[in-house]
Image (cartoon, rainbow, N blue to C red; front, side):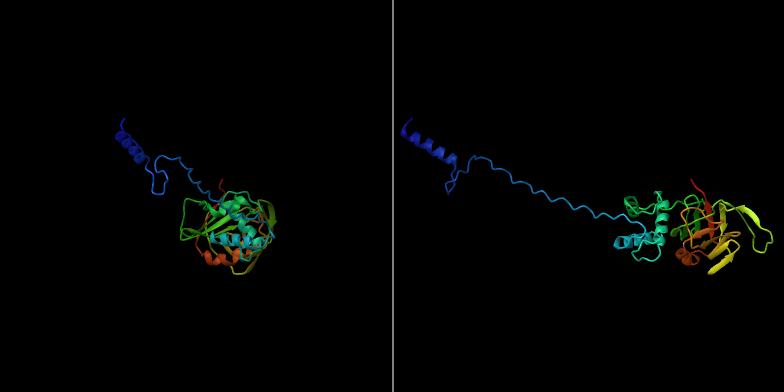
Length: 255
């Protein structure tokens, strides 16, 4: 190789190396490590609703009461106090949603409050304005314009055998304390307390002979009446405004 050829070869090698103006090599280089991806911090867990029992007080109870009212279960005054009115509204909600009926509002109840089930109609006749009564689960639903306007806990006939004098009778008549199933209509009503041979009825609305919807001071979880449909006193206050005369009533004992 002569001197001229050597110069050309060396110059070509330098050109292929391609140095930059600052002397750094722009050709093949050792690959640098890729920047590490930032990992977002874990999302905070959603706030857990506390377990509530009768006697509880505070914001969580108020939230419970407000939600029950939104769903047409009447807990009475929204005051943040878990009293008997709230308790009976919880019972009704548990029954409609096929939950275990208890005094406690736990995870299952809070979850159902977020995704509630509608009450099941009691009869094929689904009039826009009607009252459906479920004797097995002990609740009733007042429908207005085809939608539930009130869902409440009740206590119906106990099934016990008893004897009493009917109004105007001189001899006692014995019978079983039952609330008959069937299709009826609301009829006579009274305002305030009405005295009957079997006790006092608050704001009664009769729908099957001497059988009436009425407010009572004692509305236990189980059937306990002589045949009437007892409801909480605060519910009975507004019931006559929701239910007029001649309104269909469907009483059933579904599975």
